[in-house]
Amino acid sequence: MKTVFVVDLNPGDDLVNEPFLIQEILRRKTKDGRSFLLGSLRDKTGQLACVFWDVPDYVEHWVRSGMVVLVSGRVANYKDALQISITDMNDLHNPDMSDFLPSSNRSIPEMVDELKQRVAALSEPWQTLVTHLLLDEHFLPRFSNAPAARNMHHAFIGGLLEHSLSMASIADQLADHYPYVNKDLLMTGTLLHDLGKAIEYTVDESFDFTEDGRLVGHIVRGIVLIEKGAAEIGGFPQSELRQLIHLVASHHGTQEWGSPVVPKTLEAVLLHQIDLLDSRVQGFMDHINSDEGNGPWTVKNSYMFKTELQYPPNME
Image (cartoon, rainbow, N blue to C red; front, side, top):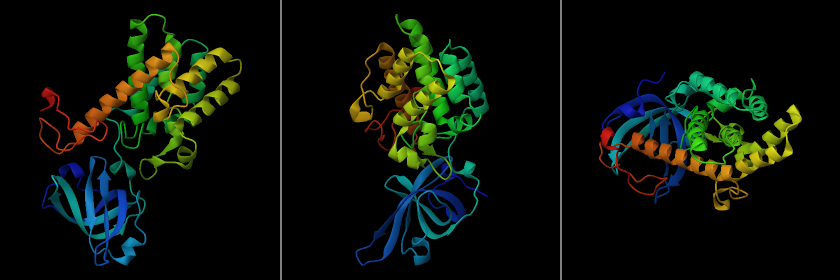
């Protein structure tokens, strides 16, 4: 059972058989040929760097990213950040992963209820399609527990659902603000644009790509699922289906960012900007919340924004 979390660690703390998830592990050699490990450990409250000098052969042979291990060592301050200098490491079987993977601050059952309300507000044929795809009893648990990303934004259990609902809320307002918007199409796009991420990511050990995620990707997988769902319910208008598929295909905005086509319709332009806005704001807040300083500026540069960030005044 986990007793100490990353958020509570301080320089000088000694750890004995404390469980952590290995976020990343790299095998290295010193100049005189001795083996050591560099990497990062995490739990649900955060992550920190680790180093294991003179690593024993019995550890080096089996250790890998995604494992939960029992760590002994001392916490130190290294380059303005916490680091564990490991003295021993052992495998931990059948861990409770809820201790190691971060989850949404929102209740997943409450978010599922909100999702059902959003779906119920759609006109036909959109409501039937989204119900068939998202509210399926086998698919909904995967969708509602998946992260929206591995590390950039909404990288937590329930992150995909939270991101989709946040986008739907923004889209609801923008569709009323701008004329000529097909609101049902846009709302459907917010709920289904990342559909494939429920297949792309695994949360069994850590937030990592599945084989499908590596070989196919969430945009292509999402389009396949939507086309399959439309065929299964039957009678879905081809023109509306094509518009929806364009939203999914173009929501990354540029081919350099992974979209096969760029946005070419009003709803596609809005969807991309809503997605970008929500992911950037969440990425900003994720970096602020994980910062080890006390403000007014973050200690480290943001990976997303490539710069230090200023705390919102009411958070200092």
